[in-house]
Length: 92
Image (tube, rainbow, N blue to C red):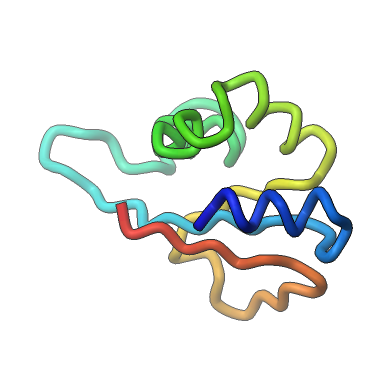
């Protein structure tokens, strides 16, 4: 499914992909707010499935740098409005 989202993005049908993941906390793992860095750095550990689909961290970083991919934890979407974007929600 993410491959189709990338295809639509490359065609210019949409401006960006919003990648939403639930940040499920685990015992003995720090809450996301305690991790160093900005939001993209804090969420980077959740990107394993995307690395597999897109071809590695470099390609993800390039999409983020070009504002074609926005990472967002599920609990941050309240009140947001996504214009001309594909909203891709991954369960895990």
